[in-house]
Amino acid sequence: MKYINDNWKDQVCIVMPCYNEDRVIRSTLRTLKRAGFRNIIVVDDGSKDNSGKIAKSEGAKVYRHIINRGLGAALGTGIQAATETDCRVIVTYDSDGQHIPSYVEKQMQL
Image 1: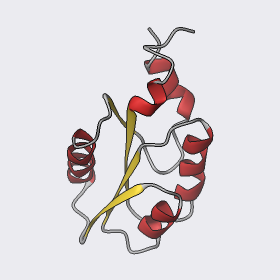
Image 2: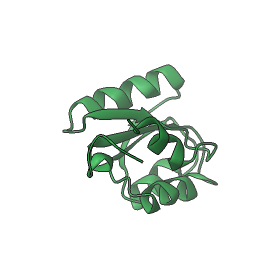
Image 3: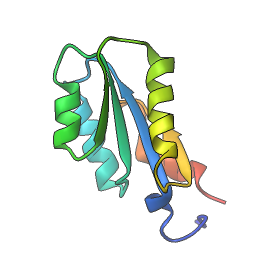
């Protein structure tokens, strides 16, 4: 497989909106980290559970909406935050575990 460059995962920012995902977000984040992704932004969209706290404890940068504003607003917050980093690629990723890191890897292949 050929990728853009050898350190491409360092240039990817994962934006992960979440709402009441405390049962699965830890596993989702750990799977991403095991795959080598380190730049992860979680937008806690007004969760009533511990999703944001768990994400923070797993090393994600967490932004929180006080109330649930919906997926579009959560993505907007996360993408805006990602544009303020030195990442070159922004990938949106669901917090409920339905995606797997190889999906990101496949998209990054030349």
